[in-house]
Image 1 (tube, one colour):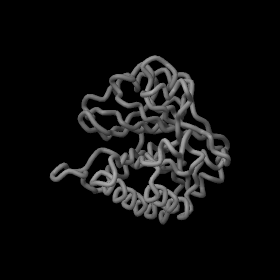
Image 2 (image 1 turned 90 degrees about the vertical axis):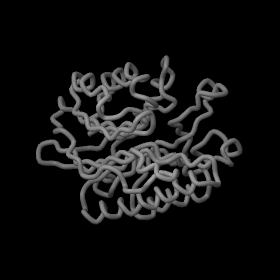
Image 3 (image 1 turned 120 degrees about the horizontal axis):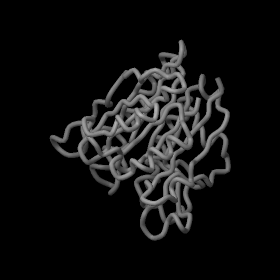
Amino acid sequence: MKIATYNINGVKARLPRLKEWLEETRPSVACLQEIKSIDENFPAAELEELGYHVLTHGQKAFNGVTILTDRNAGFDAPQEVQRGLGIDGPKDGEGEQARYLEVDVVRGEIATRIVCIYLPNGNPHPGPKFDYKLAWMERLRNRMAEIWSEEVPAAILGDFNVIPQDDDTFSVKAMANDALMQPESRSAYSSLLADGWTDAVRTLNPRGGVWTYWDYQAGAWQRDHGFRIDHILLSPELADRLDSVGVDREHRGREKASDHAPTWAVLSD
């Protein structure tokens, strides 16, 4: 089973690139972030034509997450478990942002819990957006503990907006003041690993140097000034099955591409 996460930075703008990626790499399960679309306007029919089931948790113009499962590979439609973490955005009266979607993915009699997240960026910091980021991470940790207690094979995928270690960025100095790399952000991420979750990409790339994001500005892609913020965390049941991981860098270099590259892990049957 190949599971993948891809921040597409707007489904309407990136639909041709998204369809290319799905056709060329054929993930069993794909978690998308920043779809920037309400559910009713999401182009589900075009992805269903490619053989994918589609479940979305959208929001107008911002955020939004989607989970796709490969019907052609024998996967059922994702069975929704939870939508949202029940935490309001940083603005008064804003309500909850569309950042969390949890499902059971079933093939035959085998079920896997899949969680797609788009964790708050937190900039500028200090301030309410950074406070919101940390509160969201604490709520996520609590929910992950609940999933852990169910003893189900589980994977948490998405744009975590956290650079975990110094060798996860092209330049510590350049990112030193960014919310993605603050001690509080890193500590919250480290707590997830301390709870027993496995960082799939780090496990098979212990020396770091793997990027999943390159900014549109300052020629970051051309200069390979990237960093790793898209992560796949596995429960012990899935960590034992981890076979390979990768980043589809080539897709970042295509015309009108997202500023993220798809990140994936293959789990043995």
